[in-house]
Image (cartoon, rainbow, N blue to C red; front, side, top):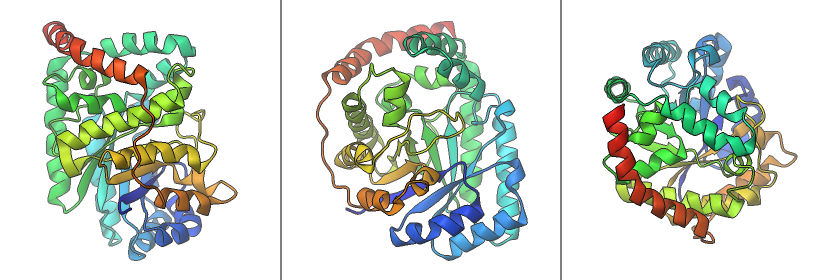
Length: 334
């Protein structure tokens, strides 16, 4: 089954990717999305990135701010993110490195994510609603979207494609006329001409964060529903990010133990027509006793509709009926 494949790499340096990941990335025709920060601009990193690109590995720059600045680009820090992205491209260009793509990781601000995750499992939904409701500001949201449109155009004018890695619920807004979820998350995604939109439907995190209220079966059906909606609305722009295989910035993310746990969601995404797949994360796979087994399983995936979840189907149907009313109320009071 032909599909574009890349791995997110957040806690592994470019030289380590080159040393430990290159053989498998080349053999299985997989790209890599490299997390890059303000202090990543070193000669050693530039040489490693140059060598990865020279070996034919699709290279995605994944700019990230400091946790104090929000880590993820959002409504309050787009100017800082734009400045970092420009410096990264200039630095890499000086070494003859031009990435294939820039990834814009659109999540809740870091401090708000911590606030939600620090709550007990049963209280996370209530905490999330409270945090997200306080973010509603339609004027600020529109301003941020204009800034992202300009940033997206500026990147693409340099011959580099763009990818929005967004929260899974955001992808459900492609069907409607309101953008309440994106406004609440401070993450304008729709209305920007990204080359790929890749919702992060991380089965292990969804199950873990809900304390099992959403089961693995439910989460895999959610992968299918989200991918189908995005593919139907955006065609080849539709992508998906799946996982997780290793912890990230929060250091306690629930991880998948075996590649078979990843396959159901991957097969669901392929069945929905998605052909751009990102796996979080490379370092998690490489740390396993037999990383080749993960690569083989992923590349061997075939489209397969997962078992239906009545719980998710009911929730999505209810949301579609209630959502327009909530959208009108949010627009009125934001």
